[in-house]
Image 1 (cartoon, helix red, strand yellow):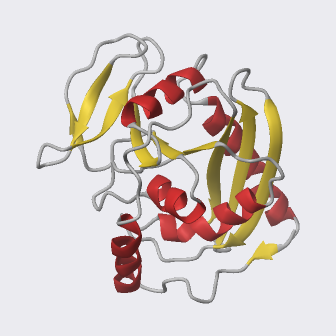
Image 2 (tube, rainbow, N blue to C red):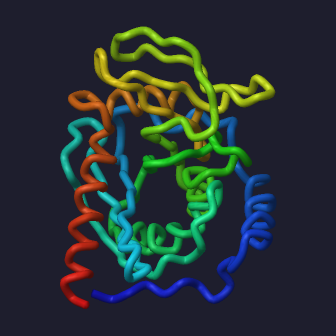
Length: 232
């Protein structure tokens, strides 16, 4: 399997990455509602790491948003593009994620990341970064709240509580996708409203805690990583 190389102008250290975040963050679009849930196509992206070999595998899985059936799948394997620094994890993944997305023949439609958008200390997580670079509508759906707090939320599917920064800004929502299970943490990446992001998440998580986009992309990137390891 071909290994995607890191772009030659990719940031190599923390100051360079922070400068890129500062510049790209100004391009995030927050005043669009995004596509209606259950319409068009929706694409899940996820990554898996082989830390010993410094390799990352990315998967992009396109679903019909209405039926949640798979339309197309693509993977890419690349070198880890950046050191592990909290708040800058997108720089480790994006070149390979972009390669997977660019391999698709279908328009990705809405993209769902296993990560953060606005719910990020610098308001520019993977979902926002990917949205600005591609121009696509993107949301972040994470399993953990990172550094933000939230209040009590009800026990039922669809119950939510605001995810709050220290200054009181609502940067996302803790959203319960199934009765009695732990919530997910939804935030806007690019060109989607927070209400729309939550509605998409609930539609995509009709049977399980995680959205079907994330479940399928997670499985596929792990397969791609194992195939890459077997080929080395």
